Amino acid sequence: MDEKLTEKQEMVLKIVRNFFLDNGYAPSLTELQSLLNITTKRGVVGHLEALERKGYIIRTSEPRGIQIVSESEDEEIYEYLVGIPI
Image (cartoon, rainbow, N blue to C red):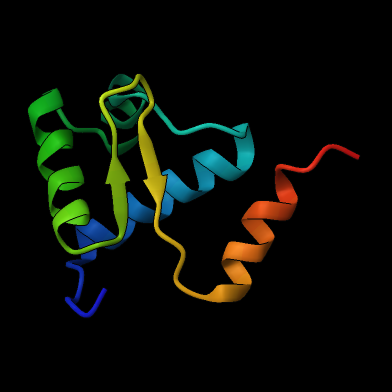
């Protein structure tokens, strides 16, 4: 994650992260399209491809298949603990 993000890419990453924290799962392309006020899904995919290329997310072929790459060991531990039922 050495490569800097553009202002728009930072906004997309923040929206994905906040959506995940609020809902417990990643947003769909349609939800991101609406949240970002982008007219086409291809525009959303372009931002996600850039974030993936720069190492900030991992995308899978599953629906809502966006995973945020942890920026620190503490964040990895937090993400692990969030998934443990109480």
